[in-house]
Image (cartoon, rainbow, N blue to C red; front, top):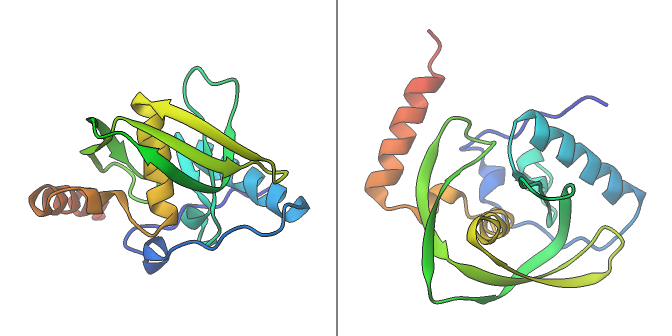
Length: 166
């Protein structure tokens, strides 16, 4: 299998809301396999189908300490804490760019697995930040939009300088 490259920011597909997955079939599993291969090659700890240019509500997360990758289909945040936390975030679509993003410290997420079974999960810490980050991306919200204009402009300027050919 050829590993896809992530769509690069500021590609307009990253600003589109993804459609719900309706068919839980072999095509979805194949897309999940491609997504995982792309995420690992990037490398990253999370990636959405939108990062491949496919506007479907599918993402993968593979965090240190997990038994393996987790796939989330049609995920939504159903509860978020008032307490906030900050974590360094970035994107496989904008390699080398990172910034501190403040989000709710705890969330409850509802999603389906690759077979269509419904699940709920409470998460805190880094996992909560990752879930929110990927759900944002499926909603067409790129992580930079969670920053102040000043921080966003600085990160973009530094990233563009890094991307210029020598």
